[in-house]
Amino acid sequence: MFLVGSFFLFAAFLITTCIFVIFSKNPVNSVLFLVLAFLNSTFLFILIGAEFVGIILAIVYIGAVAILFLFVVMMLDIQITTLMFNIKRYIPLALLFAGIILAEIIYLTVFKTSKDNLDTFIRSKNNTEQIGDVLYTEYFIDFQLSGIVLLLAMIGAIVLTHVYRPTIKRQNIERQNSTTAEDRVILVKIKSGEGIKDD
Amino acid sequence: MTSLSFELTIGILKIFSFVVPVLVSVALLVYLERKVLGAVQLRKGPNVVGPFGILQSFADVLKLLTKENLLPSSSNKFLFIFAPMLTLILSLIAWAVIPISSTYVIANINIGILYLFAVSSFGVYGVIIAGWASNSKYPFLGALRSAAQMISYEVSIGFVIITVLICVGSLNLIDIVESQKNMWFAIPLLPMFVIFIISALAETNRLPFDLPEDEATLVAGFFTEYSSISFGLFFLAEYANMILMSSLTVILFLGGWYPPIDIFPLNAIPGIFWFVIKVFLILFVFLWVRATFPRYRYDQLMRLGWKIFLPFTLIWVVITSAFLFYFGLLPN
Image (tube, rainbow over all chains, first blue to last red):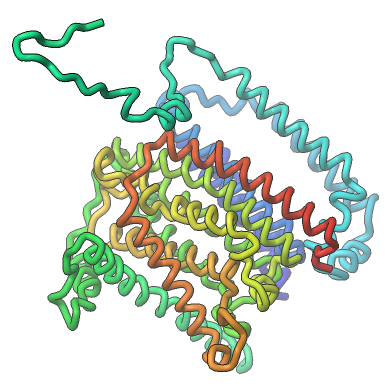
């Protein structure tokens, strides 16, 4: 009873926050609602007993991804973005993705596994250990491939945005650390009335 | 139904038994900080209010409470008020999983260390929301600095935690402490211990990494616009976070509630005493560092995080796991 009740509570919150993500006028509020949506999906994962997946979702998406979103969105000029916001343009694409995800969910729940099977599988062992058992054995290739995809995305972003400017003066920390007083300061005895000759 | 309400009462009492000591020790920590700084700089520190000035922090709290709470007219009102609340809530809910002794903990969950890591990484939201909602230059710059800094140092904290986890074989905090019964992890993993303390300084925005609130360039950083109790909440949260990170250091590296040597007069003393003593020592290191080192420049801070700590911890994770694997020391 408690479980079912909390499921519907968090699910309702999740859908509400998702709607607010789309319809908020201010993009910063959108990102903050997105954070709430992530948090609610974390709770849903914990409810079905997958606490490891849930908390990793929280660490990665709330602790890192959403912060970077917020970082970018905070620097936008809000007036311009509200003018540019045109919901009708994105509806076909949104429907396409919604359709794909719905099809996946139907495929997984109706055809792929029976519910009881999944339940006993989840409850049989600590789910951190379960993931540890299969991650580097059964799913080794998939795991490494997803790592390479992320690495490629990162390198791609750097290559696209990085412009090398030879005119910029950079610090050479090794050189700074290895300089001694003798390299920089010379003690000169000046005779009266002569001054220093610059060479 | 009676048993449920009984359990609820016990739970609430347990929560209070953690939150109240934490808040009191925040007040004492502020007093300690001023005394330590005073001693380092050959001053007396607070010495007027109460015996040895020990009530100074309480007097400061009372003064803060009686001030007017200002709301900047161009700020986002809801988020402006929400940010300090969020910061304090996050620094207090983390205590739910901290084991003070082998039995005394609110929630002994399987993924305790991940929960702590998650909560400490949410801490940046309070800062960034405060900076944005203030709608003012200095808080905004402070928030940007803080977000970048906390994300950078979380990476190395993550790798340090992974190294410890490889040695323990469990994400449970009590298991982590119990596997240090014979040898504290600070000894075999000394470099990681040092990196963890330095990263903890950066994560809690303490000197020499307090660039988010760098008074020389940013007035007061992200809480420039805050006054009265909303400033007080940020202040409270910062010190509560310091105590939290010290407790985490003690749990991960200094053997939690275990005495330094397992012999009679030492192991007869209750574990809570050892835990508090160790937390106190780490906190003293925090204050000592503050009195000793000048502030880092921002590019130096980023360089230290990404170019030194990240590769070093990454290599150390590989070395540790290879060592444990080849000598058959891996847990389970």
